[in-house]
Image 1 (tube, rainbow, N blue to C red):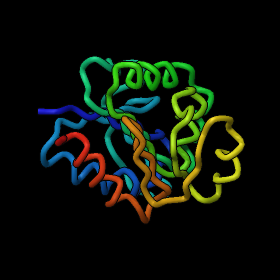
Image 2: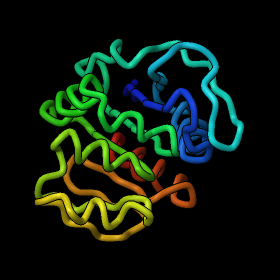
Image 3: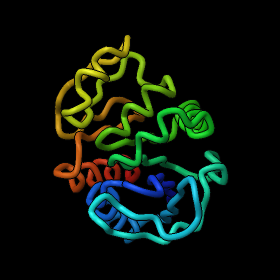
Length: 169
């Protein structure tokens, strides 16, 4: 069974961007959720999830996919060097790296989007366009190699579907 590591902010993850893919993917994949703290994580829209795993416990070799969830709390990860190193490890192992909403900015900060077509939350389009080597498409969901990006909550279902399709080959 393929394994997915999902990263959420401990406070302020975007509920639909997490719960839609999570509830879809747990049907057929081993899904583990990671955050900066253990305990009851809280979404922007008041949804909660009991986090049992810390970011630093992610072992890229043990997973097939890394998924980063957006929301206002996700901005705290832009400066997280540990998460950036994890992203680079997944990418260098040619494993699927996926991000929704503002989270593609974290992938950009990790340096894995060079010469990649990506999308992002519309409010961050100008910011990601400024990153040298990134080709912003503005699509709901964008796939380029082992990178899948999505623009936000309204695309959570399509994002999950593309992750599923990629992992199923």
